[in-house]
Length: 84
Image 1: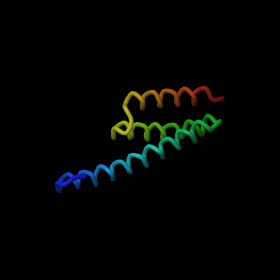
Image 2: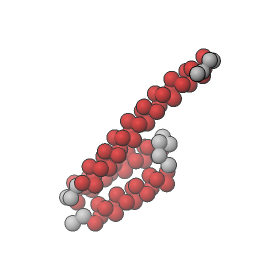
Image 3: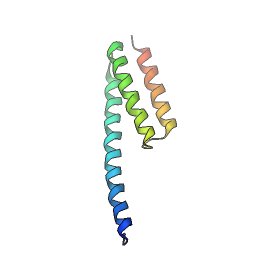
């Protein structure tokens, strides 16, 4: 365990960041899941922009890699475009 004051603070900060990142990640995964369930193209198109924004924020915060973000956005866009 940490003995220095600054190291103890760093442990507290990293724990808080980890919880925050887990929350954002889980929320985004749920939004992606809900988007994949949609069958109406208009509704999916509206939701797609919100989900892409969430994915971009995860990549910006380094919760996920930028290439993973790009792959997710690409796959979701293809899925929405194939809806009738």
